Each structure stands twice: as structure tokens, then as C-alpha cells.
Length: 157
Image 1 (cartoon, rainbow, N blue to C red):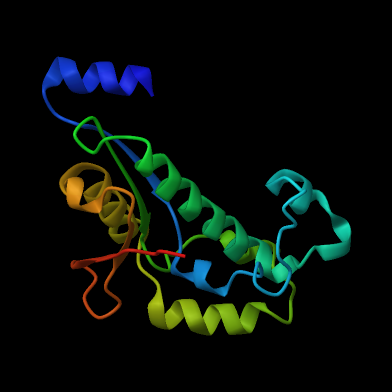
Image 2: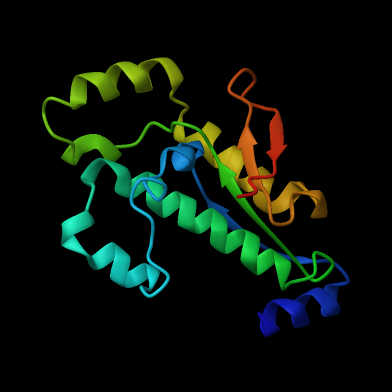
């Protein structure tokens, strides 16, 4: 963080850190299987007795968002702008390892909602370069109605 702060002072503009998140973070499993206060997040993730294969993606994106919020609390937006962006469903081969029974559902879902890599990349670049300190510590989600509009949603626990 010190290098980013130095860069900010040198160029008289905030440095930036943008994480790629997902709106699916709302479907995390932490409410049904909470992390015990005595257990670290890494131990929780390593515990095979509570592993939920189809929830790990959502869980990991929820943790990323919590990390972004915490990092933003201890970092000034005038020095480093930190945000978390969701580009929506982007056309990738992410589902190639999905179970065979799950692929038709994902094919139909992505056929309706997918964006090209170019469109998804544009949304991420906009969050990383264009939006200002109003996005600091926030989950930045593209509007599903208009792929070029960013809606700023504060995801507060």
C-alpha cells in the first residue's frame, strides 16, 4: 500500500485497486453455515465437512467484497481508490468443468445474459480507471438493463 500512496503523491491523483466481484455474492452460504469465531477463513474453506461445491464461488466473492470494504475503511480515497466491480455474465469457458447435468442450465442462462469479453472488459476498465472516489469501498455493479450504466451499490452487512 505504501507504493500506491507514494504514486498518488507523486502524480497528485489517487492510485487505484479494483477487484472483480459478482452479484452472486448475495447467495453465499455463510448464513446457513457461519464461520466460527475461533476459526480463520482459510481453515473454514479447508474444512471438507462443510464444503458446498456449488456455493464456493458465491462465498469467495462475498469474502472479496468484505475485504474491499475493510481495506477501504483503513485507506483514504484521496490516496487509493479501492472498489469491487461486477462485469455481469461474461462469455468465457468458466463452465467447461461443470457437471454435465448443469451445462444446459448455464448455456441457457449465459445465452440470455452474457456479454462479450470486450464488453465485460470495458466495464472492469471503467471501474478501475474512470469512476472516482464515490466508488471507494463499494460494490460497483453494471445495470442489467443497460450494459453501459454503472450502478453504485453499497453492500453493507
